[in-house]
Length: 284
Ligand code: NAP
Image (tube, rainbow, N blue to C red; front, side, top):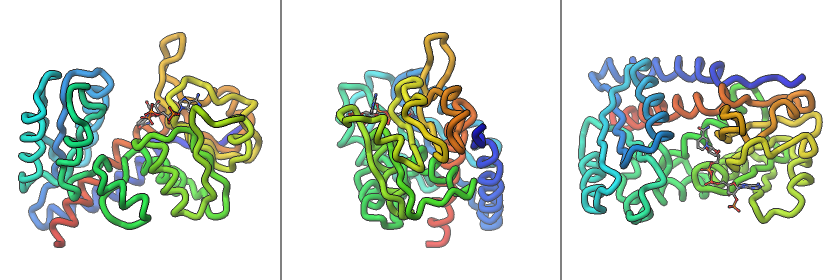
């Protein structure tokens, strides 16, 4: 029976830290504020936005939504980003991705001021992660994986970590963050040969492929810690991860469930990044 690494336990201690920082800001009459830019009406964006807003409200962090239609022009989107860049009271910005196809994502995302890039979407933020430097913010989901490991006292030094997925949102940044914590890191993807063998060799598995339950018992062995980032819907319409939980749980040492794992931690990390950005601005 594996230890179940529950997101809510991590979130509880993270939220306490955030509250302390918010109180410190309050003493200086600063209210941290998140700007949310959403283009279109994608249901998963709206669900994430609802959770982010709820978490902001719980933690006394302000927010302002900038909602644009699906067919918004590049000029309108860039104007909106420049507006939040200049807004003195907005400390961090969430922009939902992917952007609609008619927009130049690379150009638009890199318009965001790096000091407000609390979800690591700009090239400058990403450069900081790859250089192992404390500049900008890592994507919230990648940070959430690391925070879960830290919270449960799972050390990375000298361990073999395997990340399945190489997106800029999760796979690549989390791999760099594990490397910074002295793990020996392998990144797997759709062209990886013998994925079973690669994953089985890992002490720490980060599953971030977006394929329902595709990591099965033959990929796993006793002693492994599994962080399941995947958010998928199974054949019965239920939310599930990338790891077949019922197969993995009797084998591995520890595992995050889906739901109740990484997702909730990601939202708190977003708020933490906004609060940290407000603190940095105040102390500058
Ligand atoms: P993505 O951009 O689609 O990237 C998926 C990656 O996984 C790609 O690199 C792909 O390889 C690889 N992959 C897909 N199927 C594979 C397979 N069968 N074997 C090996 N590699 C495979 O997805 P993403 O944005 O990184 O998101 C990944 C998952 O995390 C999704 O389920 C998403 O919903 C979830 N997610 C969760 C949170 C959270 O807060 N919990 C936040 C963001 C995303 P190639 O590069 O070769 O195509």
